[in-house]
Image (tube, rainbow, N blue to C red):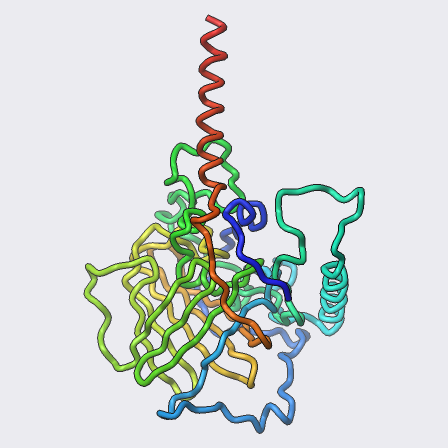
Length: 356
């Protein structure tokens, strides 16, 4: 798999924000499956006998570099016509495998067809690819319909900053752009949700502490496990204040103390910005030598009608490592958008003056 460091311009051309809302769910609970829905993938006999490794001091060992690449392309919200069906059918999985095989074959081509459409994005093989189909029909698993709950009245009035699509042709200032486009942060969930590249998360453990190094925007989260309380309510940050503990073999991380109105719960931190009341509860559970099941529950009563949950596997790939993310060094997209808007305004003013 080819991996790369890119500029904000390439990024702006390649990624789109997730769409928000669907109907509210008043009774969130564990994801339900209809009787005719495909069953969750079965555990093999070899996997059943596998035991979670331990660190020298006795904690479950989650160390390594993990990636959400295999769920690239899985929609955040489930298509309405799939109802409560969480998993793809065997036929759908086979179709997805064929798509991945064709994509891998196309990526091996070093030249493009003479009649191919020219774009500003990178060649397809520069991005990261799923290696096997993600079995889920959506990243959202609770509510059971896989849809993001309804926004509160206050949240509906919040401005959504310009994301990678740069849909606003006339931005007034840098503040019109998302914190991601400004190379500041993607937030906690935006740092692990699968996008076109940079999905690495390196986990490093020591007694009473876990550190998670996210590849894109180079976020580093140092998470105490010693039972200390959260910081006071006046201490807030983009990534919040995290505290962790073990529940059996599951690492549970509770994060509070967020700055409000900065990032959303979407790909790359897009979507409606969350509030200062946001609480995230993440769970990391190793299910086999190369897989961690990741879950996060989003609880923000100022933004969503009810709490909701996202779940997907993160996996290890031989040779995968976090790359440097050089964002500011090549972030021409925001500069060009702003200078272009000012040039357009100047031209319009000059044309209006000539008509007088």
